[in-house]
View (cartoon, rainbow over the protein chains, first blue to last red):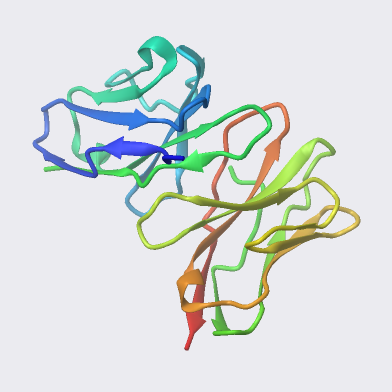
Length: 112
Length: 110
C-alpha cells in the first residue's frame, strides 16, 4: 500500500510568487489534513478535509492560503502571494475512520 | 496549546529500553494519548495510542497511569534508527486534529 505522497519535496520561490503543493493521500482515506512547521516552531494544524469538504480550516493562517480537494482524492495547497514567513515544511496526512493518521514526508518551502 | 509536557531530550544506550515520559494532567475522559515520532526531516510516524489500558504493538508499549495523568512510551530494545523526536499528543475522540508540542529528542548512543 502506497503511503501519503507529497510533491514537490522541495520548492524555492521568490517573495510574491505563487506555489502549489500537492498531496496524494492513501487510497480509501476520506480524511486529509495539512500541517506545517515554520522555523523553530511546533508542527501546526492547518485544515482538515472529509472527502471534498472542508471540515475544519481553523489553522489556515490567512487568505493567501487556499486548499482544495476536488473529487475527494488528491489535495492542493496554494500560497499566493508567498511571503518570507511562509517558509517551512508543509505536511499532508490522511486517515480513515477508526484508524491512525499517516503523514507524508513533507514539502520544504523556501521563500526568498 | 499542547496539553502535554515532555522532557526536552534524553539519551539511551543501544540495546537498552528507552522510557519516554509524558505528563497530561488535564486530560479528560474521552481523550486518547497518541505517540508519534519524527526521524530527521521525515513526516511524523505513528507509533501507538491508548485510552486507559496499556497497549503494545510491534514498535512499542504504552503505559498509562491509572489516573491517566501521565504515560510512558517504552521502546524495548532501542536501536540507532530510533533516534528521533518523540511527540506525545492528547486528542479528543470527537476531533481529528493533533496539537503537537515540542516533543522529546531521543538520542540512541552506540
